Image 1 (cartoon, rainbow, N blue to C red):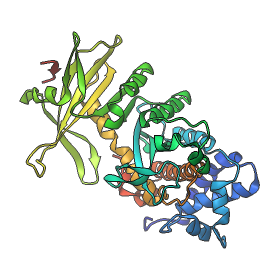
Image 2 (cartoon, rainbow, N blue to C red; image 1 turned 135 degrees about the vertical axis):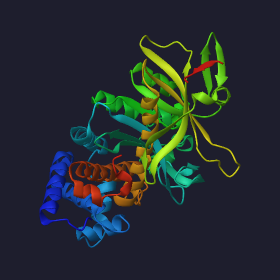
Image 3 (spheres, rainbow, N blue to C red; image 1 turned 135 degrees about the horizontal axis):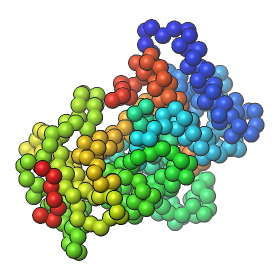
Image 4 (cartoon, rainbow, N blue to C red; image 1 turned 60 degrees about the vertical axis):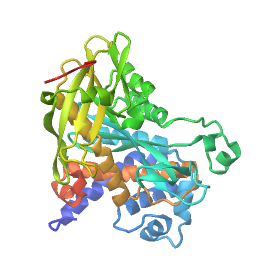
Length: 398
């Protein structure tokens, strides 16, 4: 916390938390889970090392973690309804016509095979294949701030094909297998139905390479900048295609422009960028592009690393606009980092599907409170995480 924090500042922050919890209190039908949910939220915001059941119980003055576990495992409340209130709260305070919806996933390392959705799978958090759960998240970023607003637990086929195993973990009997891009589309549809103000969507290549994901965005008139692999085939018109890396290798030297895609912890994120119009049929008034990003310094192999993006937006959109959106994808990584460090996003010790959603929802609610408080209070901004400081076949643009 900043050294010049006053009693008035503290009272203002507590009042803000009371207002936020007042929005969701009605989702807990009985007094006991309502009180426990507030205690859980306060614990997630408290400066305690591990925000698991025992430590949250101690912070709340409970002798055992039984009440905290009951809140997550058996109390009657719907975390998705709480997320409706969360989304409305975020839009009220951080909503902006230039808002960006960001899709990404994060891993939660786990032992054993009982936790819902756990299996050996790739975890970006660990940077390797490991025994973990994977959550797909939706973040909202605007000039006013950024935070997480929705999440779904990914259930591999090893789970959805085993109904007895699902039943033991509290997974609904009718839960179908859904790919991560399918989960992302579900969350985006919820945000759009709720009227979230948004101009752009961005995502990494696991989603950007999915044709159905991109088509969903286009059908809903959402402009996008999505990462794709180097092997991504790019339509060239007249039935032809070319790989993203092949097209980029043909870019003339004058096509590359050095630009920043936003400030990071170490200053401006500078790269060389090149933009090419893609000859592919789109609806009137829209355009598709291939955007390439090249690092300024060579890696250990002496190569300047390249990244590729497919873009779809109104004709006349500038290179700078697309670069800004591409850079905004880091906002969700910053949200993951701060939510894990500060609101215990990954500190849970639950196995059931519904309990996972309940903890994650309350952790996102606490994170949104910090984001909104920081947006409205310079002192809160100074005391929060530093990562949240505002801040050929194709025709190359030269």
